[in-house]
Image (cartoon, rainbow, N blue to C red; front, top):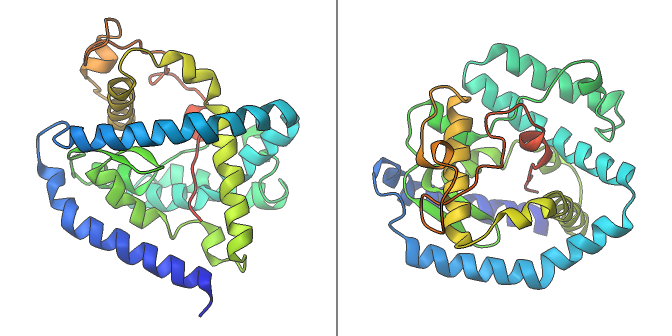
Length: 267
């Protein structure tokens, strides 16, 4: 057995154990019972971002031509279509399942492995879904908020859902070695962080609270597909640096490219 399958197995077993232990907590009503730990992990993540990831992303964006960035973004979006199609199917969204499947087939062939988003140009838009959303559609609540090392904002439900998504990437079934996978994951991370640079200025005051409320509001919107969404973050977009002090500039209720632009695939 090579190193890569071993790493996949260890990761899956770890995530499975995490899910079995923590998934029942998705029934809990407390918003952020792990806040002290979450804040510590947030500070570590933010320190790593400011020291390493953000400077690298700034440099990457500065030296990389826009067409190349667009191609990288499209490539990783296309990888995510397997996840999109599977979760749309599990949610009973037949038309969206067909759209995601069609996008993958068209962009993987005519679009040269997804580098060119041909499907969008002929009117087939992305229908982004993940297993965390599927669990939400099936009735599981988000449970307590979590901040994961390196990965950032999550919840009990969404971190458990990651186990279902990890095997839906076509790259999991490729013959790429560890170095090649690491290179692709690094490129994906740089592109994702570069795409988020423009939003850095929107985070003011208590950055932990801003990200927490933005994440939970966005996930609530995603699970309900924007139907009957009502929460303090979306309905009270102004204030100071407290739980109710946020400016809603994310366009959650608009048909933006944010969902399909920032897709973080796992290898």
